[in-house]
Length: 137
Ligand SMILES: [Zn+2]
Image 1 (cartoon, rainbow, N blue to C red):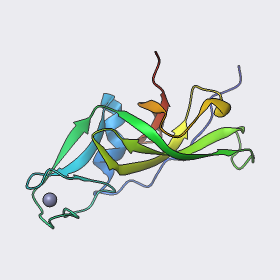
Image 2 (cartoon, helix red, strand yellow):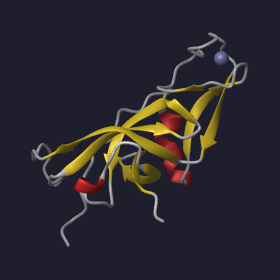
Image 3 (cartoon, rainbow, N blue to C red):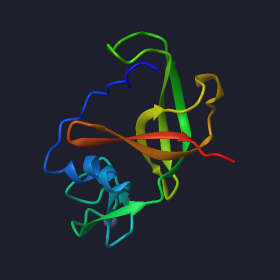
């Protein structure tokens, strides 16, 4: 097999570092408001719903559904051969939380809207990128 693809690491900031490094523990974590229980993503210092600032970081199951996707056929990145799937997934515990990601470990032709997927992480520099693969079974 060829070498594994190289994804570009995101820029880590004090505000988003917890999110990008949670995958080192195999967990997907988001901020959540202690007052109204709303999940907050992208990371922000205040709750977007109630404007409260009493936030915690908590893990979710890592399950999600494909909310939209496109298949890329262009060789934009060296070492990252097409085709690959760029998708928006909706987090199971909070479908209003959406991540732009790649769907991996499946044929791009098999991806469909509503497909259940599960997070898996790929390290890129200091970050652990949340990618998603079909739920088996
Ligand atoms: Zn709130």
